[in-house]
Image (cartoon, one colour):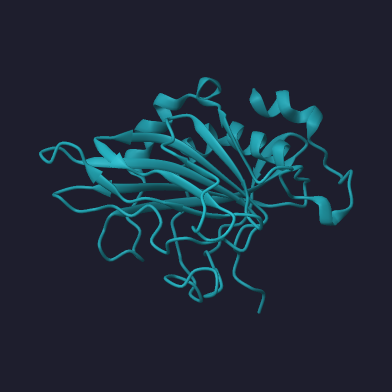
Length: 236
């Protein structure tokens, strides 16, 4: 199991000063991990990701879970809403967003991704990880927007974007910039299995809209979003 294979590089107790983790040591890095995943099964389970009630146009689906790595194993945390300050998310910031828990079968298949993310970011058992399954659709001539808020950062330390599938769509180019889009440090159409790791405080990110290639067939782009910290609501 990948979690076990990565266990020697993961520590239940922090090995570096608290301010040094979590972080990536580069602004971003793209790796391909599709060969290490049961990608076909993951793609099929994305058909069950439920509609996002916070996007009225209906082109986004989302579910999530939170977890920690304990001695090399992914251990689920308590389910809770998402919360981002308005300065980081001008569209959905300042509200509690309640999403359903991810299908247990899908969550289990994504455990190796969580383990790899934790190893790359130097996470410890105290660092919680948020994992979101997100589908953006393009149907009946409707444009799908992978990023509704445009250029942004997420009020987190580390971000991972794993492309699961893209079917009958054009667009969906992943973009990174050190200066909110004035210059680009990365612009690429991710392929299934591509895992883009981003040091969120250093760069801004965005993704271009998607459109159908064949108008008589639906299109979609599926992605897993992994972050730490996990945008839990603030304590009362």
